[in-house]
Length: 186
Image (tube, rainbow, N blue to C red):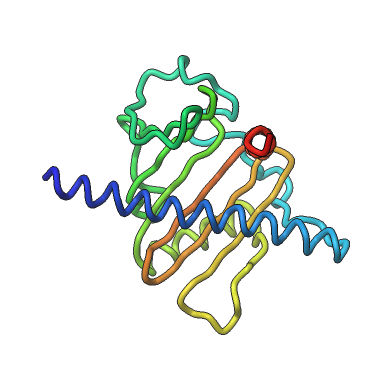
């Protein structure tokens, strides 16, 4: 049992690393392309932009939450947790994990992993119905991977899928993520 958990943990770490690289690279790319072209960022459909995840609002202090178990430490200021009674489902989508990330003790990001084409198709349909189509960063002819992004005043969502690695959904506070990135540059 321990080996399976370690293997799952290592796979989750690798997937998280790939998602974060895709997230930052997509954010930078879209920002540059949109600034140069005069296009706006991909927005949420009206009234759909979330202000947190599953009842936890962005900026919530970790001391106000009692049902968290540590999963990993990213650095001195950033830690990941799972909720003890979290359902690993989003509608028809079966999830591999849900990790809640706190920076300096405040909630700013959730990272969700899943596997399989059926879960990808169900999640993509659910996201499009809830938030709108977002902006695709996928090559049309590439059937092996896909990336979508939604950007709003409060929240940024990156959704990726790769047939070899599985998929991920990162939902984050735009303001806190920008503040974190700014402080990390200094």
